[in-house]
Image (cartoon, rainbow, N blue to C red; front, side):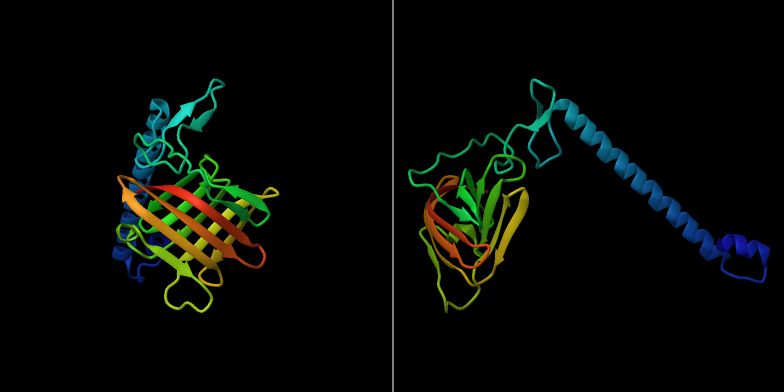
Length: 212
């Protein structure tokens, strides 16, 4: 538009800036086109070869030809296998939903308990501890009314009556969380956790978490 106006009215200035703007716009458009082409090619290649982009679980096709993930999202890429459940696994309720964890992981100081093996968990609770996971071995974290300082943050979500429900708490809950010694790439522990109100949450029992 600027170039057109300048051609119609020679007294106007800025032809050089208008040309520079056009060149920059064309270059950026070209870069985006190349980027989308590369990503699209990588996705198509990964689909055909039964893999995905780095960091994601591989794709497989079932007998009916439907694409599915070959590994639950809670398992990291590689040869991980689900850990065994303890004799008294974590159970409880998230809202009105009964919860029993299927997989657990300790990643970067956050403990996650998941129910369901799909890409999106049927129910999940994440406890952000703000601590290096290497310091958690043998440690007990207790949250009670009146306790001060930086408390663990609680993020829970689950499916209930076809809708996704969630709880986010930075205080106003009680918890006793204990970690045993770290053995290789896993750690055992137990939790007793309660969130009052609506929706409420209660969890209690033992877990075995994979270290990430």
